[in-house]
Image (cartoon, helix red, strand yellow):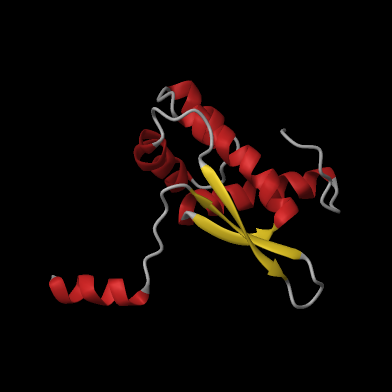
Length: 130
């Protein structure tokens, strides 16, 4: 597993938390978390995308062993990986947002490069156009 940060968790809890965060990132395109967690998530998410660029059964099984939802694996192989087919790394971006109010932890947004934020106005315009 890339990285050596312990994140204040036991190893099984840490592994489970990172699996959940990577799955959520691939599902939604962006998440808000602390900077140290984001750096660990970035390493694993980029590894999953790199594996998914090789569209084989063995690659799907490797990704399924880490990502917790089958529909996210399908989205990864069908939508996300082809978008990065000719790019070597740098699939995610970390944007710092400041300190969290409760404990002053440094917060950030980690997102997939090329992810578009669809606001409520754009959703309403799409519905009216249809």
